[in-house]
Amino acid sequence: VYQKVVDATLRNGTTTAMYYGTLHVGPTKILCDVIAAKGQRGLVGKVCMDRNASHGYLQSLEENLSETRDLIEYVKNSPAGKLGLLYPVVTPRFIPTCSPALLDGLGHVVEEYSKADHKIHVQTHASESYDEIEFTQILNKQDHGENNDRSDAEILDASSLLTNRTVLAHCVLINEEDASLLRTRGTSISHCPLS
Figure (tube, rainbow, N blue to C red):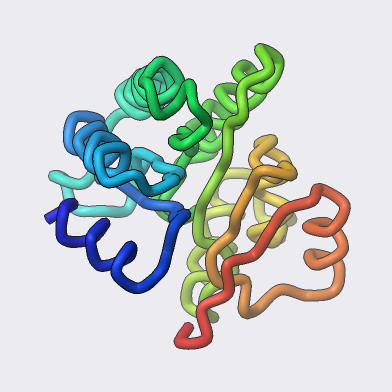
């Protein structure tokens, strides 16, 4: 499958792509290898989820953090990683599928590797639909108390996941305060007009 995906993106002129791998590090490493073999510049993340998904699509907090670190080490020590053609990406799927502990843990991973002068990117979905925002607000109040009504951008920022190497998918429903926060952090938006 990965060969076909990378071939299709290259055939369409995409020389650099940011990929969501899978929940598991093994297949995500295969994606990295395919990208490197095809000569595409790639940014690749292992998807992290520890709640609100089917049982087979969840990992524990420890598994998510361990496998994320494993992928980072794999990529940065690969020949393509050393040449700057392949980059690891910390990838919480989106807030409703990540506990506060997972978001905070992934933020610590970003900070840890950034201090070591490694280029760690972050990608996730944010403010994609009214249903997603409403569900995030319900979870946020359960997790942090009834008076807590933080936006997706504020939640990600509190976990140190908004950086100048963060790309947020969608963001079709952000307000001026969120837009200002994203500008301040240097965070990019990959906007999908179909959302």
